[in-house]
Image (cartoon, rainbow, N blue to C red; front, side, top):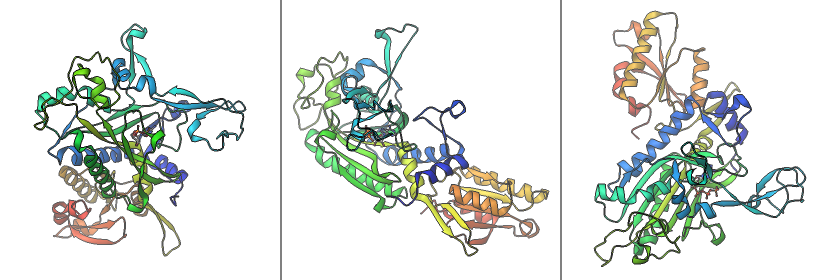
Length: 457
Ligand code: ATP
């Protein structure tokens, strides 16, 4: 188990403005969370890191942003309408509902009673209607995964970009699942974001590419600052595999409630494209697909070694953004006891992910020259474009340091009397992790800012 409790993280998130309960004002909606001023920065930084590494840094991946509302035929063909469900049981004693596969010893997880109903399937999709008529014909779903938007746009993207195998399509966006028992803060929620890549490969190359992506994604999480000892790989066993998967490897993180899935890397074979394509019978599809697609497109690709167009296999690394944010926060959380016996909390978060890159603090709030200089430094650093810089004039300097330690700001910059009096103006910078302080010329601070906060490492 991780050494830090979920309560500690939840309290920090609320107090400092990372994450709030959704609809808290009206008693809250279970399994729904809102991201506050710092949470939205952290989340955006994590998304940007993923997009930069998965899309921009590669020459074999295109990006996409498909819609959330999804045609019911898409989710019928994908298998979600019929099989995207979890087994649910009711407790006859306390009337709570729970996932049958989450309970131990056939005991209610709320009251411990053994008087439970038989498990029955509960479909996790949120259903809605489009247009003014609430009939079956107008049913649409909030997507339960971003992946289907990629499969249904496969031909559009291919035609527009002239891609050859192997290539991928990446997407970050909201997904919705009506989880039976949302729990563990933002770990299992009903509205969340996924960072998904569908990487299309020749069927003969699927295992190699699967292994490649498992390693790539594990390394990526380590590169985001997560300690390798807190991550492990787990192969999903037969009955755990989704209906579309030939093999899935999960990357587990040691959350406060134990090792659990952070990301899954699945070999979805030709199941999805095969299920959505027209002329299914003319193509050599290997998966046990949903037949009779009413599709208008042929989702196949020509490859030099095959006489006929083929339906590619797809390797899917799929990560949950909320789970990523939680893992980053838990892993970064540090406590230490200072010489004077006081406890110091700091978030040792990778500078690229830090919600605020630096705080600029005027030592005297009533001295106009100091205030003006501090504000102008803030503006200059902001213009560099590396992320949010905070002008910080609340509380005393000690409080400002404590606040910024706790939210992971890599450096604090203090503007004092010496800064305005000297002919070579300088400021003090204080590092979050070491608490070391040093004097630096303002000119050097501006010129070397990225390096100073550890962004170029
Ligand atoms: P679990 O077994 O935990 O329910 P899953 O195997 O159903 O997850 P996938 O369908 O593989 O999850 O989804 C890919 C990723 O999306 C997961 O690795 C996870 O990070 C994220 N995810 C899935 N469901 C949720 C949820 N309810 N809340 C937050 N993130 C989720």
